Length: 279
Ligand SMILES: C[S@@+](CC[C@H](N)C(=O)[O-])C[C@H]1O[C@@H](n2cnc3c(N)ncnc32)[C@H](O)[C@@H]1O
Image (cartoon, rainbow, N blue to C red; front, side, top):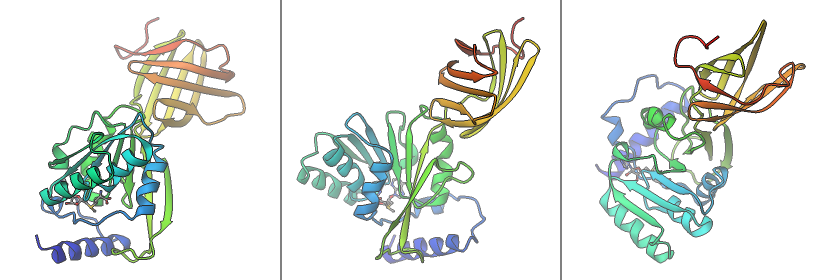
């Protein structure tokens, strides 16, 4: 597609969204229309900083453009990386830039549709796409290993609210009305919805992304808890008389700490195999 048409579409979308007018769902047509616009250097750096990228990380940039995010992740932070990009010329350019930066051994660029990309190997996923792309990707992102960090330049993820957002000045921004960029970070929350049993207690958890409410029944005692999930850590909001912190690991919730009325609670809860906890 002609670069100008692509840019016009992106600008129109950005303006429409800035005005809060876009209410239509994603379409396959639009899913082919994200133009090549680079994240400025300060935004690229912030995307990696907010995710805490380090040498143990594997960063996947979905729609990698000229490769800048993955190359900086490798050259500055020692990470390995993969960029997937639909435009073959940009893939070639990325490979050249990686060689110039001396990181060709640690990064790869594939000419590939981002929606057909295997994401499970990533510890960090970065994106500068469009809102409907983010929403289409959301189920696959939420299914990743708890704690996987997702970073998006500008666009959010609907009612999956970011764990953190920073705002950066971008004086020469080419799209939209704002001369600034947002960088959003999400940590994939552990999936803890349902019934858990252990410690002679039952724990019924209702989850909405990083928020949870739980009903803990132990003997004749009933307690309502609510709190946040950060990756594989669940922490109840501080209450005057009870606190609970759990660590999620597959089908177990380990008690990390319990205080107040819950002190003495230790060990772990296991995911219930039936509709109630035994005895
Ligand atoms: C806004 S640019 C972002 C480039 C880079 N990530 C950055 O932040 O500088 C989006 C990129 O996604 C690419 N793209 C669009 N649709 C794609 C798809 N379905 N699969 C892979 N890449 C795609 C475009 O060609 C473009 O280079």
